[in-house]
Amino acid sequence: MNWKFIVEDCWKAFWEAFIDTPADIWRMIRGK
Amino acid sequence: MFWIKQTELLGHLKDNFLVDWYGIHGIKHWARVLKNGLMIARIEGAREDVVRLFAFLHDHKRENEGRDELHGLRAYESARDLRGKFFDIDTEGFLQLEEALTYHSDGLTQGNLTVRTCWDADRLDLGRCGTMPWAPYLCTETARNADVIAAAYKRSIR
Image (cartoon, one colour):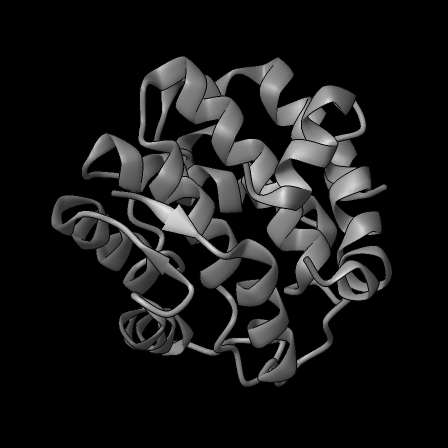
């Protein structure tokens, strides 16, 4: 898992998109 | 059958992305398309694996942020190359992905349920371009719901 890429390049995008369903955020970022 | 190396795929797409990664056709848009698509898919019964691939791939071969009429076709051609390296999906799913990618900016509203779900997921995010999604241009009953449009619009202009 490339944590630097996830945190710096993807985290904010997924956080904003899934903020109303927070349980999904981490699952989506990991691709599960 | 379906698998995806999502972080590796997104890293590859970023490395080869020609427009702004954080712009109107970049990762933030892709994440919202995923959000919209999974929401519609779970209600309508569309395929979530196709929706996920569509969200990440539909704009990845854009050459500009404006009218880039062939970017859907290029996205499909690229998806053919990426299949087996970063993801795989059964033949039927890949055919649905092909149709969804190739024609996603052509304004079509008819077709397979999963394909229509992909198109609606993208169109529900039009607020970022200053356009309110319009129900007659949406393809699923779920997406045409006024509350769904309002929520997607609010999300798209955050």
